[in-house]
Length: 281
Image 1: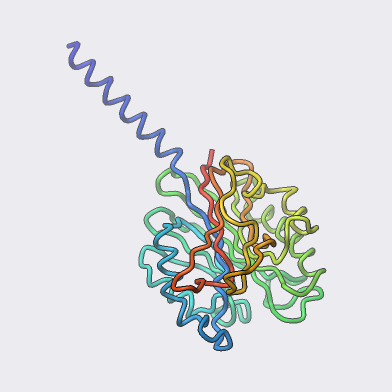
Image 2 (image 1 turned 45 degrees about the vertical axis):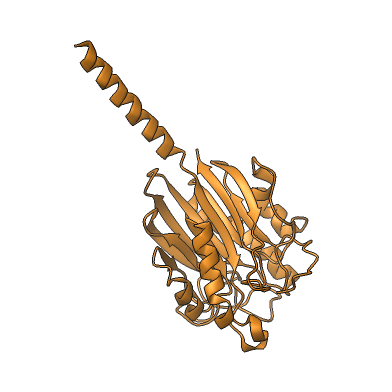
């Protein structure tokens, strides 16, 4: 009888330990501006970088990551990593034309429950430029996911702010806060993107009034350079942090890293990916 009680106690303890470990399993999150595919980049054009990007993503084993600038063909190239699926519409027609702010996620870790897109403009429900932007339409893609390990649900947003319009960047920050509240309501949120904005700008401060910047929230000291853009230059000063990851208060940020990997003397993109490990409380 005592042996049976002991065995049952051990079993219950083991089950409780497994449940506790599962509930606190970190999620590896990243944001990565892939750099559009243009022949003018010469040796840094996408056909020469696609394999490097896949190798980097595979090695660091992101669970979910937001991308910027990728054309559909580029996204399909990344999706050769069969462990991932992606969502996101093209910014020019709401289908497949133009750059995307696509979200990639591991199919064996996350279940996609819902997805959508909106444009960073005064008319967010249809393709168009916003405010003083003169170059491009700008889009945000979002997804609602369930973590298959923890069974918890969260929202993930990926966006790319304008690189020219000062007003467009500021108003995009306001719109992001508005849309996140509208879509996610009180659910946990991760927002990533190339905001073309440093932390001292009004738009980043607006976002940080609602969400925490992972750079500031990390438990371990941030790893890597401050800057996230190098323009394919190995000797770039790396001073401007324009790629960001924001999280809602429900998340603990375990670590933060800017990944500076180069291969054969070249970078996989003109931006560094930013990576964090987070736990949803």
